[in-house]
Image (cartoon, rainbow, N blue to C red; front, side, top):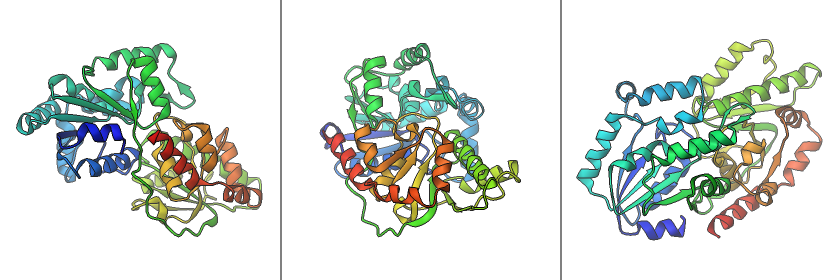
Length: 376
């Protein structure tokens, strides 16, 4: 973990306030698990989640009583917008439970993990406050092919700063772009955190030609929209040819429901699609596909799936958003960037030229370059 963070938290009483859903597979969940593991080694640590936990009934009841946060969650589902990003856990119930934890545990350090928890820092004064930015809301695209204008970015930054207690606080990010943006629009100096701690165990991968992997939390619109366009573009190519070479492995939380709903909407257009579904998996290294496809058209921060794939030696073919927050000198080692999802579909369709190009990529070298850049 970042040496700066290690020095701050060593032998301290830490209250870790988590805004990431613990019950759903996501990039934020992956990086948070790694942080919690390291924090628990040499510190007195207590965990507080602002998300619904437990069985379905408990989660349902919790989701109902956390007004008005539940309204902002619904708004984000049906109308994604940067303005509601840091209000997803805004609730008197959450605040009350947090204050109980704080008064009972009396931590010397509080770590607020995700911008939806930052407003809670206004109610307490520990010795040190640490903010972990998984992404910066002001940088998010609010819809396909649309990035918030500079005025909206500045306005969003000004409003979010009202939720921060900046005196004596420290800020950590995962993305090179986020670090620059925090300094420019927020006037905040931040430090980089690695997503993974060292290199995962080596996995003997036997890449299957013409097999392509897509992973993500399929309840999130930024994952669904890109994959939908990719599949439609690919099937359009198949319709013009007698060939149908590609198989797609769709993995992650909600994958089965996403594919079922997608095929119900486009039964004729996508009838040629060859796919499999993996709703749960332990690590990306278990997959044997030729490459990871990242048809991401919106979002912000760094894409954990890109770094995780590299760590297991899996090349990544993605949009510019899939490599956001990563210097070109690094992502070019292990990735191929496409200008459009039509181009990505054409890559999946090409059985001759593309596999050779993918084999030439060096994903593990990209991972080590990323780790070295973070440490510097």
